[in-house]
Length: 220
Image 1 (cartoon, rainbow, N blue to C red):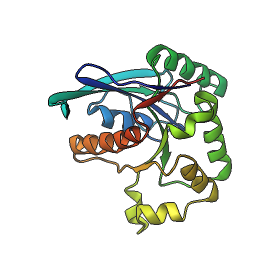
Image 2: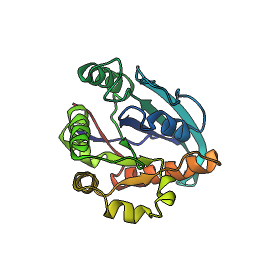
Image 3: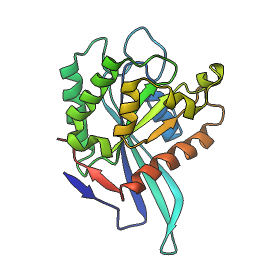
């Protein structure tokens, strides 16, 4: 089910969902979007995120509409990764579905599918990721999903541009990018100027959301 929602007051609310494998950088990406350390993010031999967690932030005077200042409220939902060190796949799905229903009853603007740019993406992994996303969001997931590549600074070590990386990607990864209509973002780590990065990330995501005319997806 698709909806179109834009607040009638002077604020736009954007609902974002973070999905991806364990240790892919979901929580770190969420912190960058919020501009603060809200989600626990660290290198650890076990999965760090066990519960879905929603965090919010507001950017005042983000834009202008009909001569008035318009604020932007970001609502970011972090989720456990799959495979998980202590939760099976069905438990993770159950928790994510419950969180989506509780926190985003009005619908989801964009799911951010987080992948690491510095590791090999095999066909089985990508098929598993696509199946998980479709199971959670339904058949229209591809219109409301963008791929975020973390650790993109490693491309410099490989003397590779973002364009060259996507052109040389595996067949399954190329298919995934085609399926989401080319919506992709490359994110470096570590970040030296977090406020600048937040502005860039938010604007890139908003570009995708505007292409959807601010429509929302109601997960199944």
